[in-house]
Length: 110
Image (cartoon, rainbow, N blue to C red; front, side, top):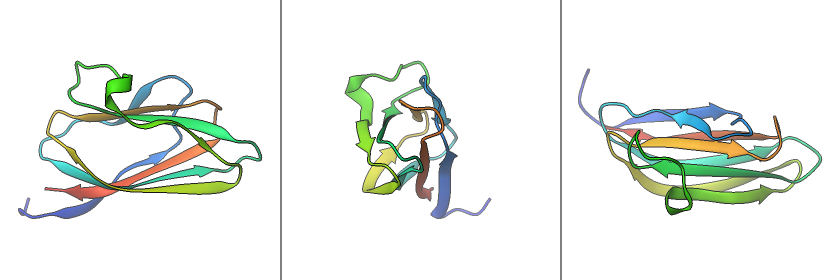
């Protein structure tokens, strides 16, 4: 593979209602540039996302990057970031209401 910096979609989907893996560790580093939180329902719904420092660490308050944010009904919250993911880091998440929130995480890989 050629060396360089490449734009990547790290995650697109709906987290479950219990903590689960959204982005698994890989070889190489990443920078999370944008997180989109879309609530497609008619009621407010919450979402929590963690940047977990290594696979053996659990999601906790100390590594939350989206701490239980309430997303208003039929709306999108855009979070512009520059969060560095090291080789062994993972992203984990959950939502409070099944199938309410669609999460999109975009960034660059190098």
